[in-house]
Image 1 (cartoon, helix red, strand yellow):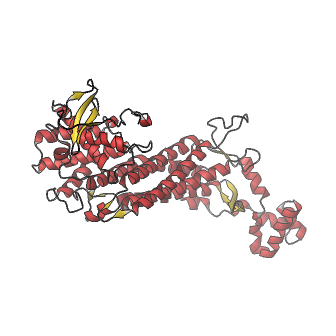
Image 2 (cartoon, one colour; image 1 turned 120 degrees about the horizontal axis):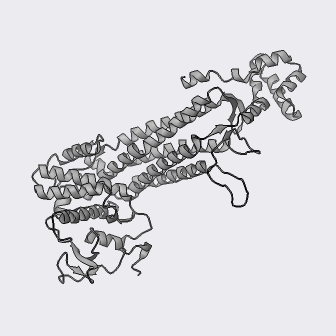
Image 3 (cartoon, one colour; image 1 turned 90 degrees about the vertical axis):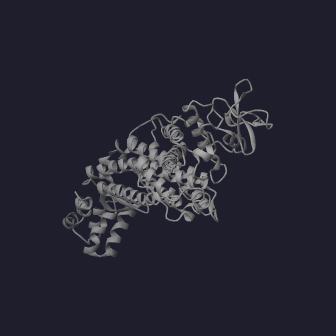
Length: 498
């Protein structure tokens, strides 16, 4: 088998060493690799890397696909390991100098300075054991460096005994998932959705009095204003934001302290509560300890709910982007009530063609989020007894969804919504030609007579006014007094609260 699968020189088969030939930390293979060990024996690890034996084994056995676990998970893990080290130090379970080195190394993980040390793929042990040990090994080896020791020796910092003290993968991975998702949604996604919502609302206010023809079933309907229409877009996103905030709050309870199966074995009393307090202080988020660690570790319900809220945002965003695309279709053979910014050429064969590319890209991102949510929901249903072993997949799917939506909202706002303009002549033409203005006549002459006028205008290709006069049901003066589009839209200023 090639030593370069996925184009990655660290994905190798020739990693195992016969037992007893070397000491941990020895440089071999001309100094290109060093010796590290785990419970299964000795392993060759690239000399320049901070990870250890279990990470190297995972690179061999889980080289599945090209998707790496998001760096956001590892940076969140940095917070978890830092908080645990602080609590273990305060409890007297970790020597102050060891805790100091671990905390310093964890801080580098949080800052992204050690991103290159986290190479594992999404598909791995379903609890995330490989990722937890990857973090433990990297933090331990970096702490050893900071303490002036030799990489791979596990002295003076041990990945299991010190970095993983009072913890298990089963409680820390789901804790890191929660921390990563809260940070991604609250600090990355929500500000961008809100900025897009504000941009849509600004257009609604600007165009509050512009009368246009409404459409239902993709067919002409009664008038409204452009501002009323766009206020609907902004309100739809605001509602999605509210649901997303509510779902994200469900991630504040953390599993830390449950260790292997939720009982807290090998952790001191109150460890989970203390870690949650530390995480809240470190991140500025209101994390608390989960009241029932068995539910927190045996299920992924909070992540499933967050994914569903992200899907809900994707559905709303898709509708908005798709409407803008339809409103801009043309320029001469479509609706073309909206002029979108011209960002790039739209065709390799048709000169001058420009496409609604920001809308199309947004719609593709939304479709992907809907698919990722389907995977998350199914994975969430696969919990067995005290553990759901689909965690890396769920972490990846939810974080990818959040990032996709954040970028899509940003691009749609910057490259489309903020620069959008109205084609007032086309809007006015549609209003004047609409047959559904006949709705204003219905209370005066009755539904059946109004319907007759609309059908006659359509069948004979004449204006609504001409058809109305031809029937004799109303006079020209009556028609002009009754059929006034601007009086058919209600009170747009009241509707927008301006």
